[in-house]
Amino acid sequence: MIVYEYVPNSSLDKFLFDAVRGKQLTWGIRYKIICGIARGLLYLHEESQLKIIHRDLKASNILLDADMNPKISDFGLAKLFDIDQTQGTTNRVMGTFGYMAPEYVMQGKFSIKSDVFSFGVLVLEILTGRKNNDSHNPEVTEVLLSYVWEKWQDGSALEIVDPALGGHYQQSDLLRFVQIGLLCVQEDPSDRPTMSTIVVMLNSETVSLRAPSQPAFYMGNGNKVATMSVNQVSLSEPELR
Image (tube, rainbow, N blue to C red; front, top):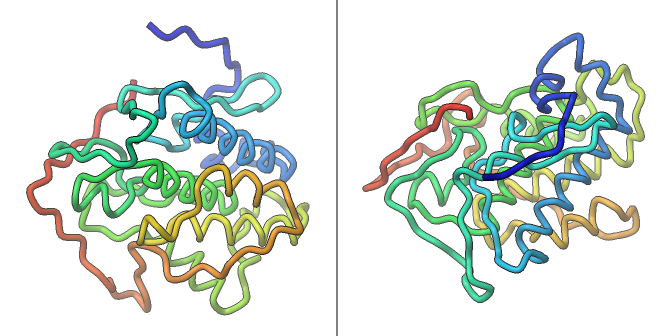
């Protein structure tokens, strides 16, 4: 049994995807939420006695306390790794479409880098106020990643910003967070940073960030670039608990 502290502000999705409540998520609060989630994942991946892979990181699993501090919740799909273990494989993929990394969906492989992918999606949702994918169909490519990538490519990344922010944000911070989000959703897990690196990048304006390449599930010019092929993997999406 897991006992949580009382969190009066429910979960992040209740604010983020609501046109009215979304205005309560100022840039300062969003900054704090992103950094708090990153520190929580860093603990699970590197500082806990056992390495913990969450496997279902998403907006509805981020609880908010009275001061809007984020709390990672719902460890029903979490996997424990030995310190030296780097990857696990399953024939029964469980999670939420739109947040799952491509190697997990297509091959059943999961690692700390699959959590990093989910974190990247969550960062981009927090910046844009848009859901990545409402579909339960694994053949549907995640539209948000394509949208952000194309705006980043043509130098208009600020156009992705959630209108609920009303223009009140630090442009340099926001652009840095967009870049970090894109680095987290790279198709190749080895191209994604670790959470320890991400925490440093989030909290330092002087750290040099490498340029991201095209994200996983990219859909250009309205056409799907790569169709996801799921072989010998059972896909399941659990109901919210």
